[in-house]
Image: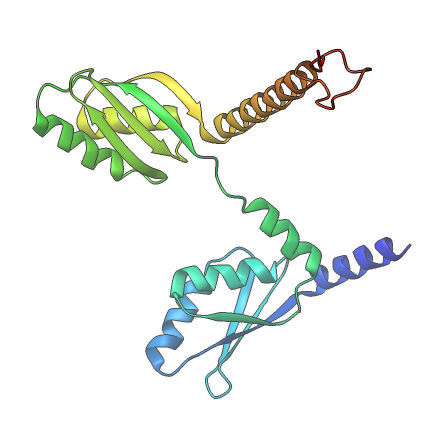
Length: 223
């Protein structure tokens, strides 16, 4: 029942319109124009009012997401933006954090013809310009280029073809996270085997008692 009431309230607010208050430092007319340009044309924004004295920006419109509006102003203006009203719910913040997960790191080995050091340098510089690329290691002898990063391998090949005019082929794709997990599993298995072998050896080598007595068959007999 509570969820239905919340949804009904949200629908009413959307039909009437939403008022968002943002805290932004505005010290001159140029800042004011920059804020207006950043928010004008954004989906759902109808009015933008700026309070220079209190350093507040009031945004009015229908079907507006306060967090999206705040992010839009941050990206476009480069200023620190604080969402004053409405206060964002914890669920929405958690959902956005889940969406912004760290990308998987992949190593791609490409077959690419490199006939001199100049070609290798040009290819290396070109690949580094692609977003998501971390390291580039060209090997002239084998005509291979190893690329490590969070990029899409197919898009990487297309990027190289467009920028350099060279033909590149994907030979291998290595997922770093999976490899690390398999290595850990192998090491744990080896440790277990070693421990089991040690226990087995310990059970085999049992020393005989060294006390001199008639019951001990290993003791020396006195003549």
